[in-house]
Length: 216
Image (cartoon, rainbow, N blue to C red; front, side, top):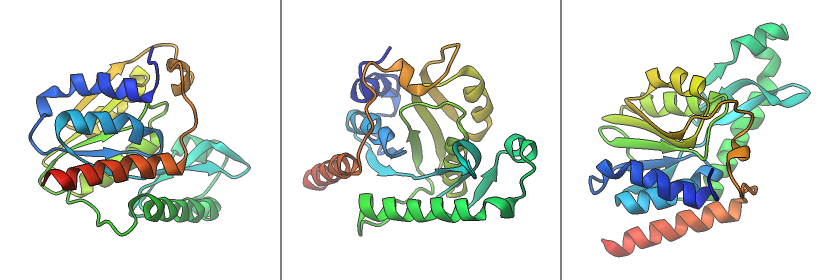
């Protein structure tokens, strides 16, 4: 369906062409979302930055999301999972602290000393390489909404229909190129979906920021 993340970003940019030249703020979800977001930000002549939510895995089963944490430490809980496994919020405090530490690590690694972008009053477009349950995306969107953007969009190449429907109430607009069923994993819709490394994220962001500074 998509050749790779960069090609998905190019296609996403065409669907967001109405936002070109208005100094929108593209907020990418690392790691893979940064590769998708870079060509979008370039095509829209937008600012590019990052928002880092983290899934909080079930103790002993890190792939199953018991909660998700936003960059400001706000936690949303997966009530179905929590109730199924008879968990209380304090039962996953260790996992929450670990993911908050990872958010801080990535923030320093990716942004360095660069200040966080101003979100209030701006048109903000959050981009990831795809969504499955959309649980971590929900934490990120709530975080961005609390910063009071003028308009908040979610833009992704692919996601299941039920996830898109659930997230609609959190944003002003959703752009999703493909909503296939059945849906098992984001990677199944990419010919190439290799794991993205920290150095790739840093390189993309630094190149974009350097080019943006040179234009001023």
